[in-house]
Image 1 (tube, helix red, strand yellow):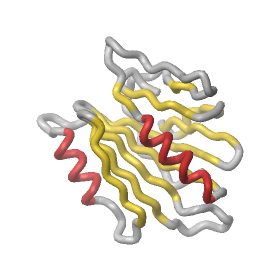
Image 2 (cartoon, one colour):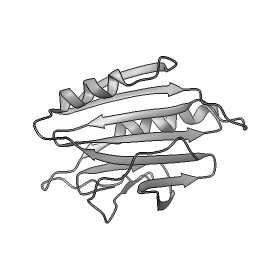
Image 3 (cartoon, helix red, strand yellow):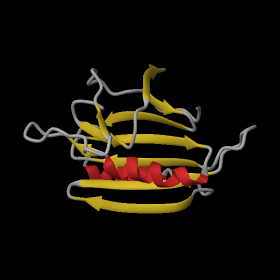
Length: 156
């Protein structure tokens, strides 16, 4: 995904950069993602608290997890739309130097399991360990850019 993060997908996704965000999509599922660097002396805990404090009061299904040095946060948010989409899945993974922000949109309620699996697969990349796909067809996603992407919008 970047030089600092990897994500494992359960199947093949199309990929594009749009408005500075990495967008992955396949029929029925669209993922908008962005990576943000921590600022100055900000710690990962500081950033996590800030992200948690910015959650909409209308958010539902809040989940918090810690995976080693990575703090993870996810929730669902019902957004106004003119189609039959499910509530959006917003998620974050905060590491020692930066965090990943994702907005995952889907139409089938069963795809919330896919969204959670993608979020949980977010892993910091170290020089010693490169991500590897499993034999079941999952694939790590890597981007050629190391710059911070702009904010992910509420779009599909």
